[in-house]
Image 1 (tube, one colour):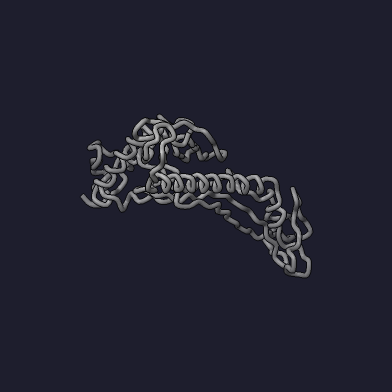
Image 2 (cartoon, helix red, strand yellow):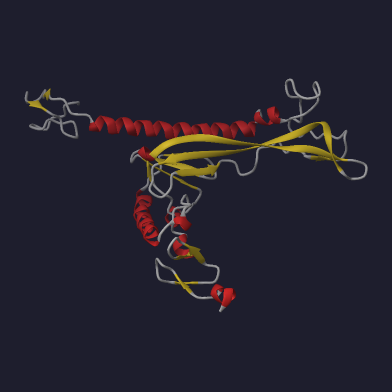
Length: 282
């Protein structure tokens, strides 16, 4: 049949058994996956092509169990704007999602103790500022001038069998002070909300070469930097609390004298006397 004949061959999803339409196949290591089943996988999962059918089936079972956790999730604290980090501090759980309909999106619900690290990643890029000469050709300034832009990402490292990292962007568009990068002539210089200034010790003995300092001093830059630090610090704090609670629970219980019945007792999980039920620690 040749290459084109194979392209139009009907394929069957190795997971649900349904027919896969044209351009709807998602390849697995040892089978095929329809787009409907693929949509049920975790949004943070990225190793589909290297996964077997059995591994995908295991993850889909995990995702079904996760649906019940989403239904019982109760938000006590919200961090972020578009993509939000939602905390259920009473249950020691969190999830990251931009969806309004949780039941449909089924975001992964993770324990505070699953967090292994968290950082704010600020991506800096620079674009050369050029001008058009009298012939309309692009020319560089001497010394060269640069406009800087920044994007803010949160990276959460987690202990999960299907993904190890959650990475999402805080800002919807780059923070750059709306600087022009192609000017009408060598003497044109747009200074929208700060403009260009010389770097300390920069090229040309004081030539205007960079707007990086102005952008980093802008309200918008500080807003996303503070937002990222708040998310990072909150997750690291609840992770530490979860670890301390786990260590305390695993520590051997010391025998004490019950103030109510006078017996020597090892308090139970609720901190009560094993004989009379009195609260040892109030």
